[in-house]
Image (cartoon, rainbow, N blue to C red; front, top):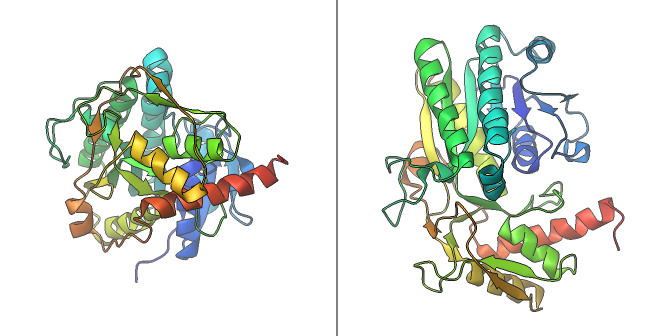
Length: 339
């Protein structure tokens, strides 16, 4: 069994990070969280998990965390989720995205190297592929981002590769496709107000928190003209992170880059039809033009992930993903005191 050494989760009060914290705790790993709470929520961090409110570029804070959590001197790991994730916003505010996603990741890496933290798992994205020329995207598909968000993540991937070549650190870059759903036990979920993720927006509309769902682009070269994406349940994604960490620790000279998806796509309209089906009500669709930086279709080939890790998805069903998102949205209403 892999020794359970301390793990620091950056952005652990956010959507995906909070699910990774739960997955680590459930598997018996000691875990701590750093989050500046700009988009994260303190309630998303479980009781008993050490929490540090601050910035991942604050080297003094990080060195204190590493010392307090016993993460230096060749033990410990970092799971890095902190960052900005809204593609259209990255087009409007590119320098903000390069500062938050790339420059601060560089600072985090420098702090990790200085402390002797040997393992680093990075929350990357399928946006690094841009608009691929193939129907199924492998890790060898050329990376040609079409927005600053994708570029900011690709730059961090390159920094990781260069750092691993020069220092005693190995890493795993996990390129997410579209993450959705919520913890099946209802412990956490996507909580951001004004979120742009389709399934989150759609379940909000189904519960009357929005009066419609905007459909951005109906003229893509897809089966119904709307964008097609590969949706992966957030808990399955979190499980992949824990398995990746175990692999990095077992093979310290090896680094990994893997797609995280199910290898199938659903269009925007198909997702909205599924939400209608699960909730037994009709969501109003409002058709609009394409957003800047949106590809028409993005579907993973997860073969490397499945071949490398003993990963068995437990929630690879669109209706189940929607059902868990809906359950969390109702829970979140209670947390916020909404009627």
